[in-house]
Length: 330
Ligand code: AHM
Ligand code: MG
Image (cartoon, helix red, strand yellow):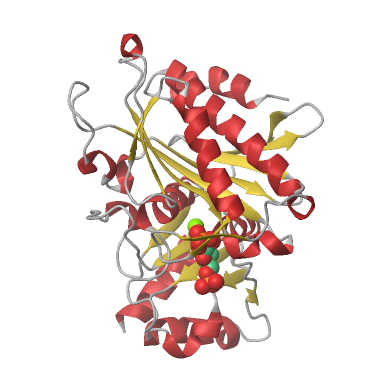
């Protein structure tokens, strides 16, 4: 059984960038994942549940574990001489990391993270996750980092993935050569390959949407929900919604289902953030043989204009997403 490190080395020819950089990046991500996993697992026993008392840049009530996860990721990227800048859901501006100048050749990766996604589920023992997305900086190494290094289209991502803290802890990633999942064995603290080459199955089984917002959805979305509930005759789609993007996506990619967070009258641009939620999940979706859209166009081709930009988000099996797009056109 491959460990994550062994798998990366074994498949190094599939990655067109430096294997050393990839190993350094994952060494940071694994360390952060293990530290967050440990804290999440004992959340009820420590002081770490509940609100931090801060309203974050999203205007949302930040949880203590959101802040903890954010700081853990920053610290674990700092010492590895591979990441020069980080943008996080929990930080208004991007963060510059000054690496060892002698390792400047390595220090050119940009990371965008949602350190702890599904925050509303923290206090109630429901699956939560971390999401990451990696780019190569656009500006030249001897210049300061600028917003343009972070506002890259999703189709320029070189790595994307997530960690789900669920019944077990699983790290799933893509470098553009399929999607692979590794389960943490907590007794030895190692991630082992458990889900090689994840692909959406050939069954369309479920749909995931917060239909408490139904009255405020665009007409096309309402029609698609009706289609899921009525038009499949005696075998309607099953509704499943956790309220953690990572958890909903992970289930849907394994069992066959569509995730939908449309714009609503209250969130006219949608709720989810393009750069560190939608783009990485869209990259994984496409690599798993699915489709990711804002209802009209491909997520990975959206040109970002600000760090915390929101977008409507739909991802799932190609047939289901295309069907939804048809309803949106009518
Ligand atoms: P968060 O990053 O603040 O946790 O928000 C993102 C989450 C997604 O994980 C989830 O799919 C969605 O928000 C749920 O929103 P809602 O409660 O409106 O259904
Ligand atoms: Mg989130």
